[in-house]
Length: 429
Image 1 (cartoon, rainbow, N blue to C red):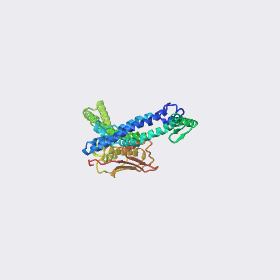
Image 2 (tube, rainbow, N blue to C red; image 1 turned 90 degrees about the vertical axis):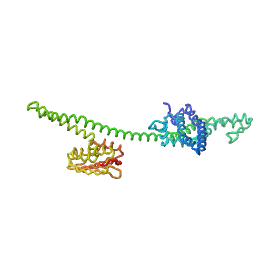
Image 3 (cartoon, helix red, strand yellow; image 1 turned 180 degrees about the vertical axis):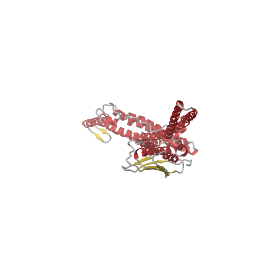
Image 4 (tube, rainbow, N blue to C red; image 1 turned 45 degrees about the horizontal axis):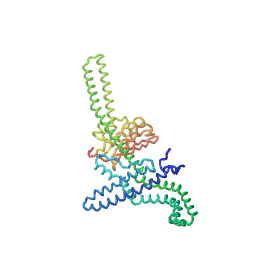
């Protein structure tokens, strides 16, 4: 398997016989021409833009100069491929709208744009000279040692030769010994160049292709997608409720009335008995449909808010429920729906599992939070993770940055608390 980057190749045998030392040397050496071009472009752009800023013509040029990090970073991410085959993805996100104005607005608001501008300035003034210096010091030093006999034969007339301008070789044995030392240093230089290239590439990756930026954007987009799914889910529930209420329910109501009238007009006998049976079945179907509609998205919730909807749910509970809800105004639909269904699920659990004689629902809005508490005097021992139906609702509340807590020691009492941050809407309760 081929190595993904220079660092992996450095730790394996056969590194010097592979192409990685040459790729590392090419990476460091190619910094110089790119850096010189970037330095000239930045200096000229700043000078011309600053001079013309007096008459406002230079302001667009200075704005373009602020975006100069984008092409430089793109080139640098491409150059990373010389020493690292791991993908270096752009940290920039796509504009929400088409057009140059939307693109520019997005780029100027991104942190990555300013990181790349900072990298461009550092690269143009510091990094490429250091890359060139590291290359020269690492590779040219052993080359200068190897060239000592040649220098003695040509420049020194066979009597002496300068060795890296640090001392002078005065005899042929000394010159050849220096050349041998240079030859021995060449393999070491290959490793040094590889290590320097790795450090330089990791710095570039950290500044202009950070993994944590990609992860952060993915997490942010994941949260946004969850919110969009919840909104779409709520909209679909309302649509289904409206279609059932205005469509199937009205048809069953009409059918029930028609069967009732036919039952009254039919003479006693088998036909009247069948009509009575059909009328009763239609009534049961209508009741079940109304219960289904109530569970999908109750109309009272949409029309009057979570306070009225919770009171209606408490009235339908088989366990007596005391309700105390004080809300100043209507709240966002998603928040009201989440709180309502948590309360309904809690009341259903009270009726099924708690053995409670009485329950209580308290709701209030305080300090930017909608808070509902559902308590009962039952046997306790409830666990949200053991099929109580609250796990999915807890996930739904977490999408809204809320939290759901359950306290239910053995022997009771049980207290469920849901808290959701929100701001009231303009509509009063």
